[in-house]
Length: 124
Image (cartoon, one colour):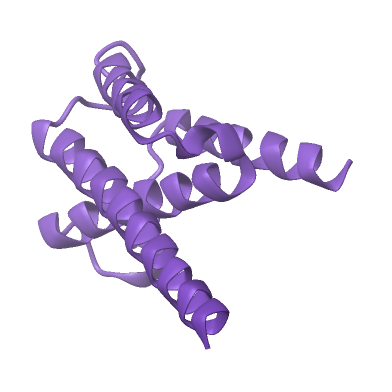
């Protein structure tokens, strides 16, 4: 039951991307900054990718799910062409890809480190 709730929350977090005019920098900054926008997009998709890998074990097969997450992120960005008060941005799309890629790389590196430490304990 707990895992199902986590899975629903992770998937529901995608809906946050469709909120018109969602720019949280208004609350903690004085205006729009390109670097902040890149940080927000890549940070969100980094966290989303790690959450997907943690909550959905079948997602851990790298290539197909990586491509699926990239496709969803790309489609969400393209969909903004038709959502009022939203706009398509190639930089945002690249930031999404950066966050997804970094998420997968971090997951892979952490998994490798834990595998090494488990092998070290088993051999001693």
